[in-house]
Length: 112
Length: 113
Image 1: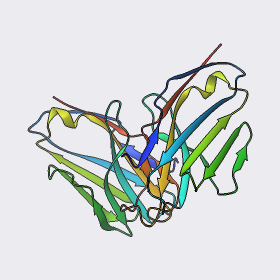
Image 2: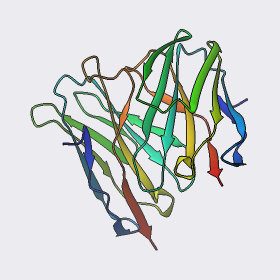
Image 3: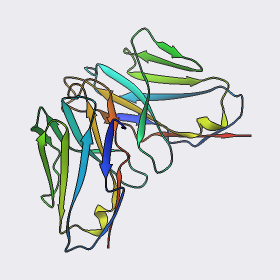
């Protein structure tokens, strides 16, 4: 089983739509969670951290469910500029590695 | 000045060449990383340095050799690479190793011919 699993997509949605991505992780001791965004042929960039209480940043909302070991990202009112690959990232003391572990990403294509 | 800078941005090398990738971070972070990203694969962790000491080597072939002379600089020395080593090589840094968010450089796109 992969440490971090994501649906690769692509998710093709019209402008203005709401879209949600889920990500599951295997290590229950994981303690830090993030969503990154990666544009084609560019480096990953931090989109937002994911807190236990959930957090919102403008049109983006992230949720963490520790019991089920999944993280979600909700994007409201999608823009063309949201088209990218969204990477789920997990870290923690007992993951067996002392660095962030990346999922393979979910590709989003927002269409006009 | 961007937070993490990598040079060169693009590199084409033959299998018998020796080259080095350079990374510099201006964020005052304590940990630096090398990741490899091949087409349609997730980022693979190669090396981790924390406070200039290598703390993780993720079973990377010896043809890749990292060097961290100080907390701001990280190198990846390459020699006798194979065509399958062609990939995007990303350097990242974070405030603390393995817990906090990492910031990436723009990467070096390496092609081995």
